[in-house]
Length: 262
Ligand SMILES: [Zn+2]
Image (cartoon, rainbow, N blue to C red; front, side):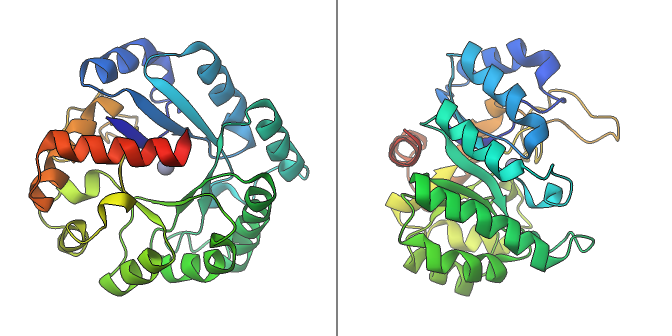
């Protein structure tokens, strides 16, 4: 299984990394795309990728929309340098977020556009966040998408209409723990419609523990901490919603992830 989106460098996971990696390997996770969120965590992520070989870690470096206002002035130059050190990395997690009202959408869009310019220039696949702002994301992404090797919509949760538009421009849909919630009718209705060649699975660990998943622990605010070993729970749910076997789902999503990230 290939976990297309996690944050292993997060302080909730890093102190127990050995256990997190071992349980991921035991659960059948062979590779993880590990996404940075800003200048603050890129070095921790770079360090992880240097020392961890099982599962295989594919780094993604980028500025998450939540943190676009608190980056140093030279963040874009620093970001570009990460790709000279890690030429096989992806760009991400970048995007826009409609829930973060305190960060003006105009600023989020500029931060995303600068990163998409870089991804086009360096020919990098991108990992995108669009929570409650899928139309904004579509609007920013569309002029770039043909010039990108791949665009992954992490934690896709848009409407049927938004799904159709993103599908038309060739995006990948990465689905995580949200699909395991029986109440998540909107996203569950779309699961079976995603073309085989555009589907990915993810945990978004340490966030979004899936229903039926096993928490590593709980964080300071009492929220359960998710880990990549829960990817099988996500895969089982998606396989049953698509009416295919667990193995078939894992084979096709792993092949897609390798095409995007490796
Ligand atoms: Zn994330």
